Image 1 (cartoon, rainbow, N blue to C red):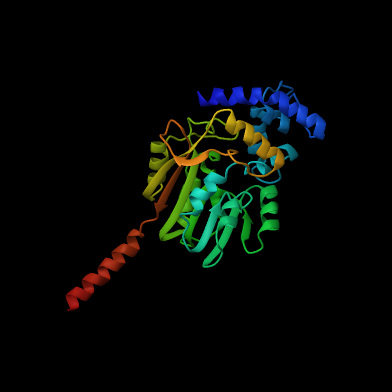
Image 2: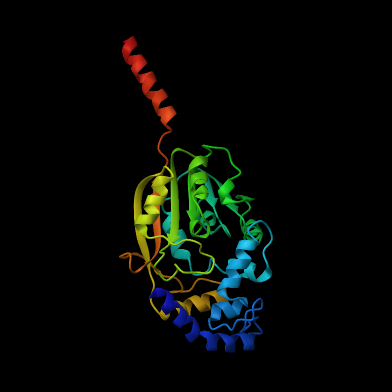
Length: 296
């Protein structure tokens, strides 16, 4: 239902977008520049690519540079998603913090650097270049979430927002577990797989809340709490999201309302995890206690 509603909204706002693009000399194309397929969605016209070609370009360029249009799609992705970052930042801990798939570094920018050592990693060069321009006190790295370039047990807190739905397999979440210190906090968000943000061109997997929770537990995390949030208002949200992308700033109602809702209405899932103490370390600690007791 949500997928077809999203399609309907795209078509509905197509004509106003084309008029605006003509008046403002903004680039658009009503046919995919790669395959020639006719485009009926204003977001696709803005990028000049159909969903299939956009996904193909994003996947093909994961190892390095991105095409101009694929990079533009990434560069506008953060607008209208403020509710996601606000939900995560409220729960972020102190110490050494890593944001996996940081994009423009939005979550890290919202964190108070006092008492925190902030690090961000992303595979997209264009997004990291913008992040570095806006954040001098944050260390950024180009890298793949499947092979994090960090030592084990290195970070006190880990953030991973809107990333796991782009990655096949479970290597990325296991890498997140590896670099997190024992008892460290991990904060994850993904779109609701059956919601308005679920079926998107560059999403390779879709989660239900139960699947998402089980996925993290399988990697070794202890789930502390979870939340289904983000109420999307049909038509109204799409209108302000379009204006938000054009004006490149957040507007009222340009993103779903940041409130907890039933799963059928939620746009995103948030889960807070902790990495349990390593078994060996716990065994050593218990052994030391037993030795002290026996000596006494």
